[in-house]
Image (cartoon, helix red, strand yellow):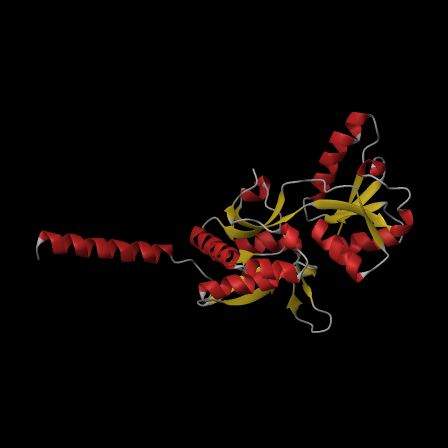
Length: 274
């Protein structure tokens, strides 16, 4: 064999080897197993009329899997068990309205796909008492303890209540956002913190019940799909698939279906929050 043919053959073998190394690791061949906590409409929830999973994350996950030639399998879990479920191999990725933040990036990688922001709200009968976010200084706010909302409320309170000589906001963690809203309606809390996209949905489901107060506590909060740091190939494949959906307009169509047009990202970003 002459040197030119030898070099060509070596290049082909190298390319094939690199391609093999780039294949994502999946728990089951042909399946994309997605860990989710379906209690967060319109992001993910159980459709009450059908008894099936529904929401933005479900539609977007199916579209991404389609680009990769895979079938989705949704693995339900409590929110606080999602990261451990990924670590112990119950799923290939997490897609469940999870905020990308530096603390979580210590154990997983994110592909950011939706803007969000923690928002304070109260019941309609309290609207005259809470005109701005500062009106909650010295009051009690509830929210899911398994999210970062407690940290968000505490940080905002320190910067805007305490530094102004006002009493701090007390945050009380609940099992989930449903429990927080129930406590609010029962008068046990003055307000609740929740993602702006989900309280907007809840106001459609329960009209004349809640009012949003002020502006989101954060301006750079994003949801990310989470991946094991041992599986960067899957992370990058999903990022490429998301970019293709953004470019084709299918991403925008999915967001519009759920009234989340203004929550769009311009492109897939890995670990975009520092």
